[in-house]
Length: 102
Length: 365
Image (tube, rainbow over all chains, first blue to last red; front, side, top):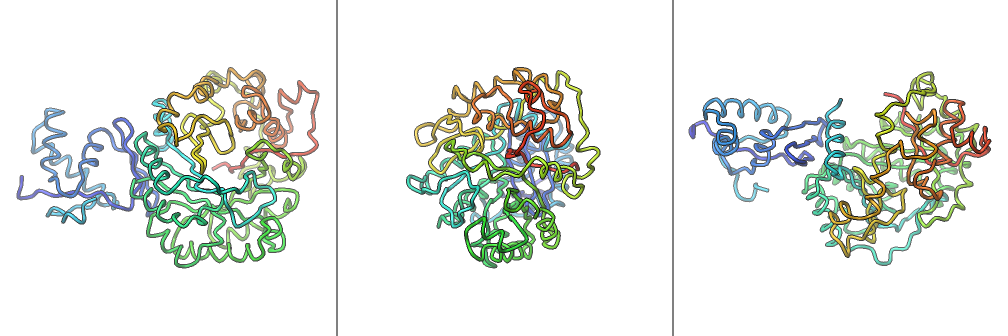
C-alpha cells in the first residue's frame, strides 16, 4: 500500500463546513456544491497534506466500518479522484512541506 | 431537493446558524436618503474581537458569512477580516457600495475567493443615483468598480432599491446590469431605522408602482405564475416559519449586539459579554422567536396568502406584534395578486394608498 500511497490537501479555493456527520463544500471558482457523508467528511477533515490516504482509510474506514484495507482504499481513491477532478482536493505522491500545510 | 436546501433543512433541525451577517462598521462614505442605520463608529469591535466572533461562528457551523456595513471598506482592517474569514473556510459575500474598489482591490478580492460582491445601484442616471447617495460621482465610481470586479471574474449582484426618487428607473438599472454581466435584483424595500424611527418610510413607492413592478416579466419571470393567488395552506405551511431569521440566520452589529436579522432589531445578547453559542442556544429572545410557527400567527395563519407570503417577522416586530402581520407584506401580496390579505380585510382596508414595504422580489427560476 505504501508504494502507491497519496497525500491529500484541502484546496484553498473552497468554502467548507462540517455540520454533524456531513460536510458542505462549495468551490469558490465555479460555485459547485458538494455534500460529503460521514466517510467523505472523515477523509476531508484528515486531508492535512501529511497524513497518507492509507492511514486515513485504516483509521476511519476499516476500523469503523469493518471493511478490508484493499477494498476500502480503492473506494477512497475513487472518491478522492472525483474531488481532485473538481479541484476540491489536491493530491500528491509526497507529503506537503510544512509551510504548505494549513 | 437541492444540496443547499438539504443542508438548510439539516441546519434548521439541528439549530445551526448556517448563515451570519456581520456589519463590521456603520460608518459610511455615502449618506443614502433611505438608510436605516446611523453612522456613529464609536465603540466598534476591534479586529481581534471580530476575528474571535468569526472563530466562534465557525465552531457553531456557520457556512455563509456576509460582511457588510455601513461601508465595510472604510475599516482599514477590512481585507484582513475577509482574509481571516476565508482562511476559516467561510463562503464570504461582501456588501459594499464599491466606491473604494479599484483594480487592485478587485484583484485582491478575487485572490481571496470572495463568493459574491453585492452592490446597490439606485439609477442608471448619475444625477439620480448621486442624489440618493449624496456623494457626487458615486455612480461613476461604482460602475468602474463593477467593471474591475467583472474583469476579475467575481460574481456581482446589483440591487436596485426603489423609492419615490427612482421609482421609474428599475428597467434602466437592469439594462446596466445586463451590460455589466451581473445579477440584478429589484427591491422595493424601505425599512424603518434600526432605532425604530419610521420617518424614512414615506420615501417608499406607491402601490400602483409596486403593482407595475410585480407585473413586469423582466423582474419576476412568469407574471402569470408569480402573481397567481395560491390558497392551499396545509400542515407543512402551518408548521413552518416565516423566514430563517433566528433559525439558521443571525446578525451581529459592529458593537457586538446579536439580532435574528439586520432588519429585526430584537437584541438577543452581545458577544462582548457572552459567547455567541450561549446567545444563539440559550437567549430567551431566540427561544421565543423559534417557538412561533405559522399556525401561531393570529391573523396570518388563516390568510389566503400564507403559503407564499414573504411576511417579515422583523417588520412585524417593529410594527409592535411579533405574532402579527407585517402590513407592508400584506400590501405586497395585494399588489402581487389583487387579493386583500386577512389583515387588510379585518381592517376594512382593501386598497393601500402607499407602499413602503420590506420585501425583496426574486423572480421565479
